[in-house]
Structures are given as C-alpha cells and as structure tokens.
Amino acid sequence: MNIVMALEMAADCHPDRFAVTSGATNLSYTQLLRAARTAAAAIRDSGCRYVGLLDINSPAAPIAVYAAAYAGVPYVPMNYRLTVPELGDLLARIEPAFLIADPAYVAPLKVPEGVRVMSREDFLALALGGGAQADAAPGEPSSVAVQLFTSGTTGAPKAAVLRHENLMSYILGTVDFAGADEADATLVAVPPYHIAGISAVLSSTYACRRMVQLPNFDGATWLRLCRDEAITNAFVVPTMLSRVMEHLEESGESGDLPAMKAIAYGGGKMPPQVIEKVMGLWPAVDFTNAYGLTETSSTICLLDPDDHRIAFGSDDPAIRRRLNSVGKPLATVEISIRGEDGRAMGAEDVGDVYVRGGQVSGEYLGVGSLLDAEGWFPTRDRGYLDSHGFLYLDGRADDVIVRGGENISPGEIEDVLRSHPAVSDVAVVAMPDEQWGEAVAAVVVPRNGQRVEPADLQDWVKQHLRSSRVPTAIRFREELPYNEMGKVLRRLLKEDFRSTPQAA
Amino acid sequence: MKTLKAGTRLKSAVCDTEVMVIRTRPAAMLLCCGGTEMIAMDGEKLGTVPDEAFAQGTLVGKRYVDEQDATELLCTKGGKGSLSIDGQALAVKQAKALPSSD
Image 1 (tube, rainbow over the protein chains, first blue to last red):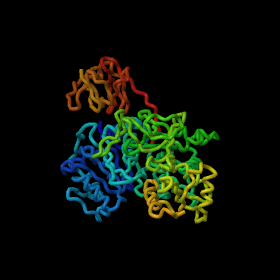
Image 2: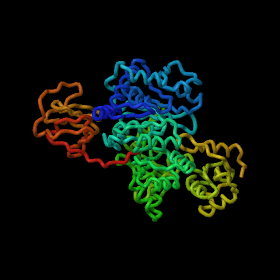
Image 3: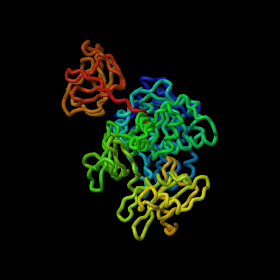
Image 4: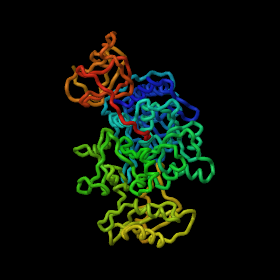
C-alpha cells in the first residue's frame, strides 16, 4: 500500500488526461508519472533522507509528493510564511534533505550543510527531462509518506507523521477510482504544506480529476479561474468564500459560475451568514463541509450536499442549525465525545472529540503515538453530537475559558457578538483574573468604522447568554490576526490582555 | 495456498489483472484469478487463458470481498479473469458514493 498506486492506476486508465494545470502548463497523468519517477531517481541517488518543499503551489508539488514516495523518503512541505529562525530550525530537523524551493524563500536563510537546495525551475527541468527513472516504490505500507510540521501554539512545531497506509486508507475510503468525468476540474487554492493540499493531490489523482492550481488566493482571481478553466469542483477554507463574496459585493460583478458543480469547505469554522449567502447565490452547487485534521490524514466528518439543502430549506431550528454542523463521520471512521472522566457523553453534551480509524495517524516524530490502547485519538477539539449523529464543534480544548471552575467556550459568545449590527468580526479569549482565575475577554472589529461602547456590547451579551458569559474586558482592533488558512491567532490576542490586564 | 498480508500486491497468472490486499484474515487461502493461483508481481505468467468458470473479468478501481467480508482486494489493473478464494467467487463491494471533500 503506497500512494504511488493512485498515480500508477490513473496513468494506466487515463494516460493522456490532464492531471495538473498551472498557468499555461499542463501535465498529463503519463507525464506526471514519468516526472515523479525521474525526480525520484535523482533524489534516491542524492542519498537524502527527506524531500522538502519551500514554495507556493506549482507542478513541482504533486511531482514531489510522488517522487518522494518512489525514492522511499518522506515528503515535507513547509510553510514559506514562517520566520527566518523558524525555517532554519525546520531545515535542521530534516537534514540531509533534498529541498525544492523558490530561491527568494531560501536567500535569507542559513541553510544547513546537509540540505541540498534546488530551485523550482531546475527541479521541473530535471523531472521533465529524460533522465533515469525509479520504477518501483520501496518500503512498506507503514513507511512514512508525508511529514507535516503542525503550527504549535507553544514550543517548537511538532512533526506529524502520515504513513502510506493512513493516506491510502483515507483515499480508498472516500474516493471512487476514476470517478471524475473527462471535463471535471478542481481548483486547488490551499497551500501545499497544508494537509488539504496533500489530500487534494491524492484525491484528484485517484478520481482522475484535473487539478488547477491557484498559488496566491484572492477573490477576483478565484472567480476568474473558475470561469476560464471551467472549474467543476473547488475546496476552500471559509475565509476564502468570505473574500469571494466581498469581492462580488464591492465590484458588482456577476457571481455566475456556469460549470461549478460542487464546493467543499473546511479548515476552520464557517460563519453561518457566509454559508447561507453562498447557498443563496449558487443554488445549483453541491456544498460539503469537511472536518479533518493533519493527524487524521484529512477529512473524518462530512456534512453532505443533501444535509445542506435540508437544513437550508428548513424553518425548524433543530434542523436549520445543521448548517453549523460538520456532519457525520465517514463510514470508515468512528467519533466519540468524552467527558473529563473519559466516559462517553450523551447527545447534546459538550466534551472532547475522539476519533478512531485506519486513516488516523495521531503520531508525532520524537513524541510517538497519541492513540490510546483502543486506537482512539484525542483531537483536542471540543464538541457534541446531536440525537441524529451530527457533530457540532465548539472550539479547541486549549481555547476554553475556565472561569471559577466553569468551562466557557468562546464560540457561543463570539456568535452572539457577531450578530450585533455594529460588529464586523470578533474573537473571545481568556484573560487572567485574580478572583475567577480566568475571565472572558473580547476583541471586536467594528463594522465600517462605527462607534460602539463596550457597555452596549456587554448588555447585548447579557440579553442573550448567562451573566458569566459577559466579557469583562472588550478591546477594539481594525482587524483580527489570521493565519493564511483563516484561523484567528488567539495566542496573540491573549498576550495583549496579559500585558495590560486592566483595560476595559 | 498463501497467507496474505495487507498491502501485498499480486498479479494474475492468466490475464492482466493486478490486485492489492486491503485487509484479510491471518489464514492460508487459495487466491485465484481466472481459476489459477495469483502470483507475485515479478512472477512468470503461464501464458494460458482464464478458466471459463472464472472469466467474468475484473475492473480497475473496484473492490472485491469474500462472502464473510473478511478479505478485501483492490483491483489495481483490470483483466479477463475473475477473482476467487478457495473456489468461492469474490463479489464487487458496493460502496456508498461520497461527495468530493478535497
């Protein structure tokens, strides 16, 4: 069981179909297979133990995914937005490595001696040239295929390990081989170092669906590529859809996407207003919410298109709220909600989300496996199941505010504040408090420069939630700090309240 | 008779079929394609044709399971022969189609 099997099968069945489009470049499955095998021979001969990628998306990324597998070494795409010292540390951890990179990202770095750098252009020239090929992938199903550095909130990033058997378990469990039509094309807007960037390559290959790469996302370009390339499928993080909608509102441009059949989203919480807006704009499009983690080889739960339509068309709040759910676990995956004592919780009760299944790696290099004796992995997400088995997430365990022994999720307070007419964006975090241990603090972005008093917002929360949920301190910012996947950087906001705790 | 292992790839001795073992039970069994025992990927083909009783063919990308649903194979290359374990024909596993999620 090796990820190259997906590529070999695709090249066998649809040798001339395009696998990847990037700008004016197209590679067929035959060309992608040959490129991966040619690059693999060079990587193998270099004696390197890792293949690194420090670059935006380009044809080099899918080639490198499979080339690393043919060379029998892990593929390690890295976040090019990290700081110089952070990247230096990561490179030192994968030495000796074959690093494919944009020279601009490498120039400021002190590259360790054991890291051999090759520019994207040189790598593509090598892979697409006529060199020797590595025909068969060595190793076992338990060999490491991909190693991803997670964005740890404290300490050094952890290296999550994904084995061939984890990734193939996910692909075989979720993708119909050659299920795509000849004309199908999926738009890949997520960066290559994210698990969604890896699963996009593997899923598209196995479905025999052409990937169109969008290396630097913006709303206008996303819409233009959708039209120019007759995109039928897309995966986005929620903020991307927000930006697409903002662009449409600002430009007045038509949002018509005649070829689009399905949009999947994940990687963060989808604001209810955004999903309702896009479902209204594109009624013919199938929407899927995909919930997954790096450590679970991507998606473990799906809210499918039927679930979306039923919820969207319902006046019953218990059904309508499913638009905020991440859906039900895949047939090959089990979910369990556990309380602090480790016992399973009943429907509607919030606890820690645990997951089990063949695609769940739950393992970090140097740390080992976090799976318990029965194979369950603690996701560190909080959530609950409803009586129909739909999973609702309630933030990260690390973000829970413990106020005088009471656990408070930022999410419900954020939802209430976001519904205030003068609030455009908001994040709720814990702040140190002498009396309660922790107290609720909110950072608010006012809508279009409107003025709003903290007392008004405190009243607003008091009208909707218990008094313990009312923020003790409220600060205003012009915008919230987000990472490129649309996750708000709560750590930075928390530090603000820590340094000057008396602001109100 | 062989004891199979998840991840093992085998090919037919009498047609183009290739399979990968997805899961199995730890017992020796006779896995055939076209009525003849399947061989290692670097093994020599017989040059004969599938037995007519086992010639319904295999399709690439389909998964095949035995009656007890204990052994599951993925067909990685289609061929003219059909698969059997200990003389029992394997059936195509009907999987629920999932929406594309990435």
